[in-house]
View 1 (cartoon, rainbow, N blue to C red):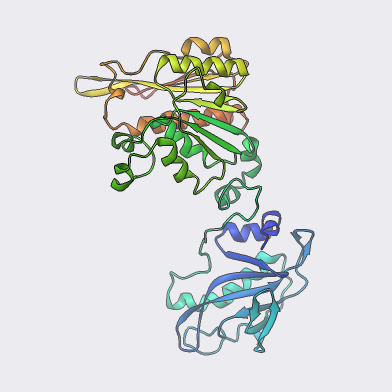
View 2 (tube, rainbow, N blue to C red; view 1 turned 30 degrees about the vertical axis):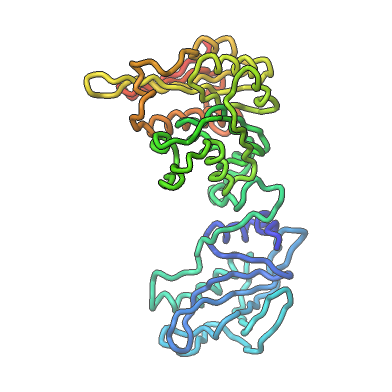
Length: 390
């Protein structure tokens, strides 16, 4: 079954976004799991069927008011036969696995298939809701992606429901790198995996240890931790459930392998150690690749944590201004509580969110000043400061 008519037809897409379980087979539109009442007064599920008229892969106004039904004849809530729809009860086989037990005829000038199908559903399901007001035909099923060009394993219905496909499409097809899968890098992966980029290249040679579990997205099991998986293996397996473009490199970056960063459209630099970060930054600058460098400085003072969460964005227009804000100091000093196992996942996720929003801003998804090259969040004051051109 091709879902292309659903994607291209506003009436079908509206039904999908509203949670109806749609199927298209052999020129017929099917709505599955429609609740109805049978002759015994029991709520059951049936399938509503309509011929589907298309121009190319897009629906046109229905010229046929007839619908078909797979299941017992729908009844009133007391079990008496429904008279809300005229019908014939001769079974029919339309081919391609589409079979109907009844034919319905509710005459009306239907504007589109949303109007037609929801009109029938209301007449059928209304009796079931009299018995149980929690039932309904909006089941919000999981929808697999049947298009080989789609980067997701299942459809991004969040974007279509919000009507922002054209906006989110501004980064579709990009190749994104994440250098380092510590707390912030892992949260960045979590967010980027929900976008239609073509590739997400993750690079880290470290093991996913127990302390990592407390500053990373998700909830690994004890069994997951006991096998001591490498970070890229663990996260690639997790996010490949959703995104097809995860490419894992189980290595520590250094000056001998920074070519792994070549060919990318944007890179998130999530590294602690100065010499490695310098080699990475030098390579990205030489390649002309825009990147975001993230970090934080958290200190313990008088029994409380304070400090900053920061982001430096380097693009062709901000290279010189951004350079002094990139920290090459190793983040393992005794005064930096971030180097311990204190759980500060909220700061990692905040750092990641700021970085991903900045990336999207650069490519026109979010409004804002594209020339800003530094963002800092003060834990103590809650203030966010930005630096851009004078």
